[in-house]
Amino acid sequence: MIVPFDVESTLAAGLSALEGERFTEAADAFARVQQEMPQEIAVALMVANAWHLSGDAVAEREALLHTYRASIDDADDASVYQLGAALLDAGAPTEARRCFERVVRHRPKDPAALGALAGATRAEGDPHKAWPIMQRAMALTSKQPALLLTAAQIRHALGDLTRARYWLDRAEAIRPEHSPTRLQRALTSLLGGPTAAGWADFEHRGLPTPPSTGASPWHGEPLTGQTILVTSEQGQGDNFQFIRFVSNLVARGAKRVVVECHPGALSLFIASGFDAVPKGQASVTDWYVPMLSLPYRLDIGADIAGARVPYLHAGVRLAPNSAGQRRLGLVWQGNPAFLATTLRDFDQTLLPQLLSLPEIEWVSLQYGATYTADHHRLKKPEMLSNWLDTARMLASLDGVVTVDTGIAHLAGGMGIPTFILLPFTPDWRWSLGTETTLWYPSARLIRQRAPRDWASTIAPLLAALHSAFA
Image (cartoon, rainbow, N blue to C red; front, side, top):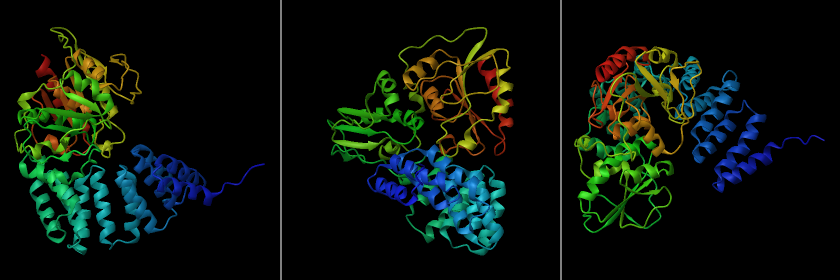
């Protein structure tokens, strides 16, 4: 006998699991309801929220996309707006834009809907198209701080940092000490180059949970004879980038500096000379400091210590080829959980132009992504989750070509020739308009000439490769 699916009891079980912070269990329960009611946007939002709380950004996005495909044509405007906002937050800007377009068609004089449409269009990688939409919203009202913040984000994406700051000033005049606005100010400031003010505003990013060891937060107090824990946060690339500042704590006289890290990076950090422990197994120390807070709390300002590279080591360094075919690592796609993955990932249709270069042997450094086209020149070694093994693989290469991922920071921190492919408006750490970066002296930055124009990076990349290895 087929037992009818009980929606109410399954929802109740999911809510109970959510209340008990069993987030994966809650997501599974809500997902069963979603399978029965795929057009119910409210259910999709429940599934997505549970996956978000569990830390699974990819599952969160897929839950929303599942209902987007089933319901956008029939749902009411308010529900479609909610779905669009959730899709945008989950890193699906194209579908979010289509949701907001649907709403704007029905409510063309709604400044919030127009602002949301402009924000999604910007996130999709088209700030030039987003700005006129933003102007329509601002013509209806110019005193909503959320709209002013979106305006600043669009000018930022256009590389217009002066006007971005203007709109941020207006937003803050209405809504002072608003953390998302202060964080955007940090990103805009740091995109122009590292400064003390930029690092101060960067403290509004949302700090990680303090360790349960009883350590006090460190804000620059004397460290002579003291111990301090540097807590891990954000992505692995961020930790590869900021671990350079640990040496500054030692220079301050700290008796011991313990670095908390993702388990996969433990052996790499130990091989590089750091006193490292896995995340969640923090040692008892006098102080703790979030890793990305080090520039601010050390009062680093613009001195980001590029001259100290290399500071990450594989334990071995194989001599690169002195003649003949060069061996280069290749990364064209990053972690799919990253919110801006659609802007950061390289256009696979352009890969044959690289793989056909006769003087280069390409080695895929992709983890969890495949290149579907058959190409005998692309070697595909097994990629392991242990970063020390990855570092040893990098040490056997002449260089690396990569999008903005953890590999870029690992190779840069090892002092390996690294060619980083960047979108038109890159992440804050890469600044604007330069081919070099203070962070990694061995890196060369290859930038899009227009939003989402990966084809424009091919010629400068080939020229940079020729110059480096001729």
